[in-house]
Amino acid sequence: MKIGCYLVLTVLISACGGESSSPENVVVVKSSETIQCEGGGFTLQEIETPLSEAGINVLQSRCGYLKGVANADVCGAPTLDVYLFTIPRSSLDTAEAMGYMLGSDEDDPGDDEIAYGVSECGDV
Image (tube, rainbow, N blue to C red):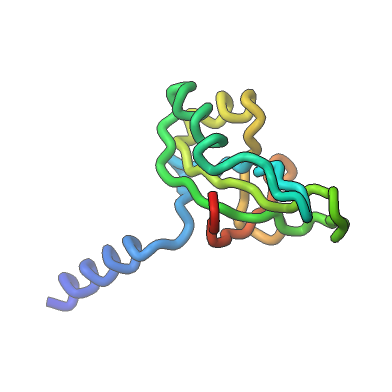
């Protein structure tokens, strides 16, 4: 009985969220190209579409922001807003060739990764 409860609890905890990145999947990041005080930029769907058109299976799409990056707080400067896409690791090379960057939710990412945080999408 204890083993069954532990198994159910483990499955429920795993299903409740957490990071989508796993050994089989990675998170890629691309700027929304939004400008401070002006808005503009691309929508989540506009940035996701090229991945799908390239045959990449997008498992999850989210909004986020770059972490650990200095940014001038002035009108006309870019924001740190990005879009996050969980894709199969086998598609990483294709996504990177298309301008998407390998993301990391760690505060101190590896040399080939960019740190991100997750945020609400708002009007995308």
